[in-house]
View 1 (cartoon, rainbow, N blue to C red):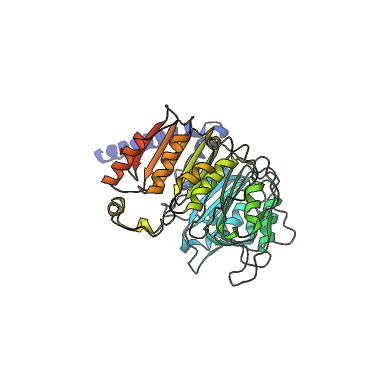
View 2: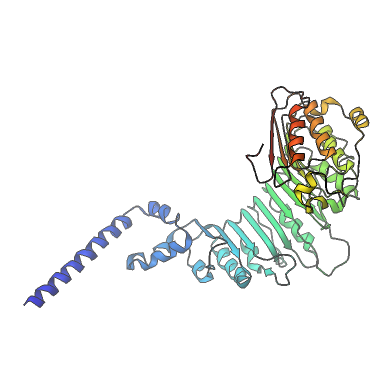
Length: 458
């Protein structure tokens, strides 16, 4: 009798627990479908899929949630299973994955499912450097993703040939390609078509893209870049890949340009002429490869340019003159940011170098101050308000340049100097005192000096 009573109590408690659990689930399930969808799509994809184990009512609920943002971070141990992607509701708003080398083969399978789910944003970051023999190969299903508005491919991966009659991605707004290869004849033409067919393209990044077969020693095929609505452009090439700006970009706001391999061709200056309407411009050059002023040939004005970023080597006079060439061609520039190039001197001990105990083979161009002052007019600095220098040294050319700018910029508000040293030295303290005591054209200029990786240093 006691045993029967105990069993009855146990069954009653189990029933109450199941009833309580069911009430909670019923409350969530009783929400309007749109509201529940909005809650569920905020879950990480892996957790969303696991809701199928809650109970029978939840078994396939996640499969009806549209506009999912699916992402797998670099720290995720899981790899997306194409079979799970097939079960997602269409459309899929975005798919982002860091593709590790053991999972390269999965990318083609993901694309087959994502094309059917009308994916709108696709980001694949292949965990693989250029020098590796293996590469991720994207399957032809990529070209079936006709609803794409954002395509970002990073790492070393190969794009296949597009199928005959491929009309491009008509809705594409953002195209970002980094270390991507078109390893076949006609690769440049395919890239050109990819860009020109996206009539609403506003952001384009081509970072070290290869447009021909790796064993082909012939001149690079031409890829004419046409995108009249472009607002952001990044064009970086370590070797000539045939990409050329074939028209001006009237709406361009920001550009990052590094095209040293074109310096000895008319295409170098033509590139800057095509982007003359830009508001923000970053130019990266290698002063070891280019021992001339890379901007000397600019004969027009960047009338809209307000922010300029440059790389410079203060041991090379042509590199220093490129700074003044930019200022001369940008009459309304307000911000100037200079990234000092890393040279052989940076391999030496910072403290020894800062104290003058190490010779600098790179610093071989002496500045003739009288000649430079005669050639550089004060109106170059008429509107300059903010200047920053990152990685500068306590060398005569470096100190002269900083003092010269401080003495000319009447509207200067901030002058930020980050020395390329790890620790405070006597040379660093002397440089700080010299800058603090030098003549300044702007009484309101705020001088800020610090060490590398030590933002609070004096």
